Length: 590
Image 1 (tube, rainbow, N blue to C red):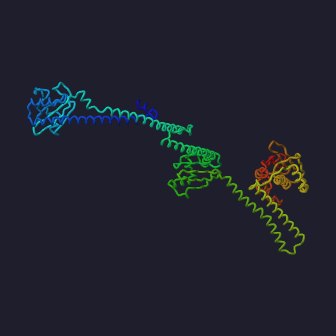
Image 2 (image 1 turned 90 degrees about the vertical axis):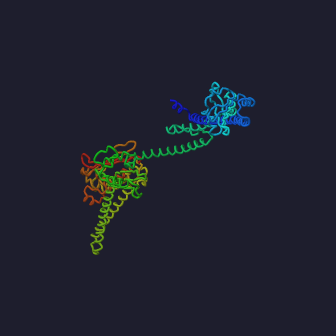
Image 3 (image 1 turned 45 degrees about the horizontal axis):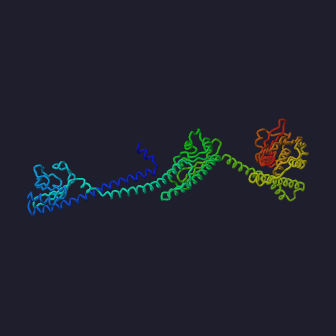
């Protein structure tokens, strides 16, 4: 509990307590050492003083002998206050004591420390040992051994208040040490408080950064090395925070892009664990797989994707850059997919799945269109070439026959011109619709002019036109394409609907955005199985009859594309009472 309470203190206070504890421990050890050293020094000084007295007494004994009376006289004459003098034989027997005439009271002193030291080292002393002969008083004993006389002279002073005072350490030094310690304690406190404040602020900053809380970037730190380091850390954090925000924004962009992408994307770790997968990836993977995938990682078990799995296994070690990409095509369930795998530097990888069914179909249609164009061009060119060869090889051909061949060649050249015109029109609609200019077009006037142009063809087939378009019906669009819509529908009716029929054109509805048109005839109509393919390029219900009538096979394809250009839609149906009906819309402002 105590340890826990200490840890709850601010860092500055804990640092101060730690430093001051170490300092006080050092000061205490130093004072104890100094006290013992000073006490030993003063003891040595007192021992030297008593040893000098012992030497003087020995000189007296050497000169006058060991007469007890003369010894007592000498001791009294040269008395140091409270001094006690004892003469001891090397065996430890007391031969003389200045304070006790009855030597029988003394025990053998051979075991006394000062006596043993004197016998071994020549001199010795001891402190604070109780004297049994003097009622338990403490004495400071100093003894010296004189081998020539086989005599140990020991002098002693009572361990009294005066001697204690003498042996005490210098209190002035102690007070000086205490004052210096207090002064240093104050300095330590100020230093640790500044240091603790810096570290506390830095810790609070780190905690807030870890919890993503708001941080005061303008906070101040003490003007010291740690404060400078703290300011640098905050600047680094600011840069990292800005970089993190930028990365977060880019990450959100990437995730949004992945989720709205028109291709299936999956990113995986080198252990083939999912990092990020969009919905299309899951959908396409399930389309390729024979069973529903419960986990994204099961995509690596799909047999059709075995080349991808083998590619990843083959490149589990750090592979060369040129081997980091694989593209395969998978056809499954009437769909064609392009699967691409890219391995990154850290051996994580991305798998993209694209549904290229439509692209493959468009490629097929383009190949078919090219073949159809070549076939359609070949027919009039061959006819023209045949007639011209006949004319050149027969210089005496009759004029009537010659004129007939020339008229037929001219008709085929016109057909060739119309075919090239229609192909050019479709190409522009496919590749550069934005290049088409737009203007305000009066549909009512446009249709009326078309019927005037084809009046001879209408009369030849005994076709009646019923125009129910309102006056001043205008559309913002391309005049040439709008002309192509109504002209091709009219030409198609004249060519294929039959004779003694009616053509009815009507704008039966309009709203804020669209006009709704119907173009109908009362002719023969079209078999049901052909209705959905009428707008395909070069598609013919009756191929022989169509070519005989001179059609290019592109008229209705142009109509559909022109309607789509104007924001509308078109479909064909048979009328209940016979005939073909085209229903289409045109945007008022396409």
